[in-house]
Image 1: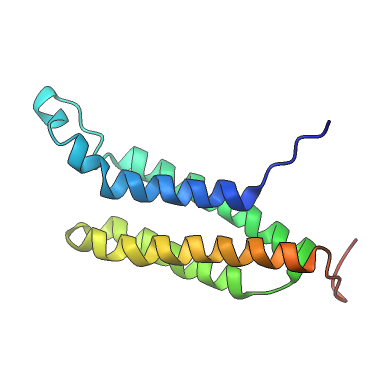
Image 2 (image 1 turned 135 degrees about the vertical axis):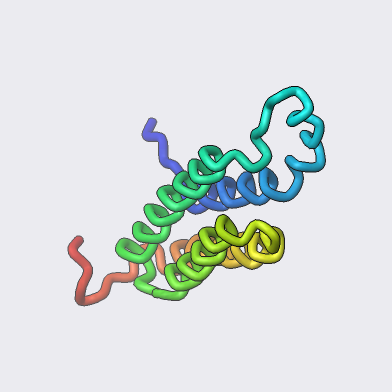
Amino acid sequence: MKLKINWDALGIGASLACAIHCALLPLFLSSLPLFGVNIIHNIGFEVGMIVLAFCIGSYSLYHGFKKHHHSFTPLLLFIIGFIFLVVKQFFIHVETWLLIPAVFFIVTAHLINYRSCRVHNHAHADDCDH
């Protein structure tokens, strides 16, 4: 039995985990700095989540683009979302206002990619190498 990973579902999950971390974790863990533990705005954790979401998302969207639908729409939405996500790291005072469109664009890109892959299954184009 061959294990097949749904990269779009994994990308959506990583994006939502990032959103939950950024939005809800401060509410539940606001007392940790009193004990010397600071994971709320830990730059290493933040960068790690961004890199993880980027790796999973870019692989998923590239696979969908190259093997199935050949549509630039999911890639464009993903890039816009990641611009918001990276800019959020530099403007902490408006972090939530940048996080909301970032998550929206990234999740939307994965949903469109997922649906496009299911509709087209194997839409071949002239540039297709398989």
